[in-house]
Amino acid sequence: MDFGDQYNKAVSLIKEAYQENLELVTDNDVTYPKEYLYAIRMIEVLKDYAPKAIEEVYLAAWCQHLYRWEIPRNSYPMDRKGYHQWRTYLYTYQANKAETLLLESGYSAESIHSVKNMIEKKDLDSNKDSQLLEDVVCLVFLQYYILDFITKHKEDENKLKRIILSTWLKMSDKAHEEALKINYDDTIKQLIISAVES
Image (cartoon, rainbow, N blue to C red):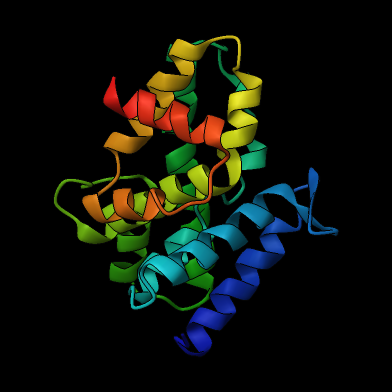
């Protein structure tokens, strides 16, 4: 997958931006800024799931958590309403940050508009590229982050099932098939099946 110099410049700027994320995590004995590792995983899953995706989808995948660390979750009320307020603001904030880097990289207004729409999760019902990105977001969650999520919320099984079902409903049929191929721990797999069938 090679989209050329413009793409390479954008990715370089995006990677540089991720280095500002001071929260570090370790994976396979390598330390990364937390959201940079997330971006790497987004690209890896996208390459496996839809290797022929257009350039704008790859850019949106790179930018999915861009500058997320600047708007911490606790800057909004720690309830369900506060979560939705935080998430809504965050989507627009990240999309605008992506726009700045893509403009610097020389992308057209049309391409930038497409990337921003995907980051802001617009037109999921009518835009196959927005749905594709959402599939990848969900697959990354199920492959890399669901265990931590379950551990964090293990005292509230109803909440766990609600979030897992919500994730499942956002995915396409193709993503469902891919999700079932993930090598889950038996406990996690049973929880997912229970949530989906509820």
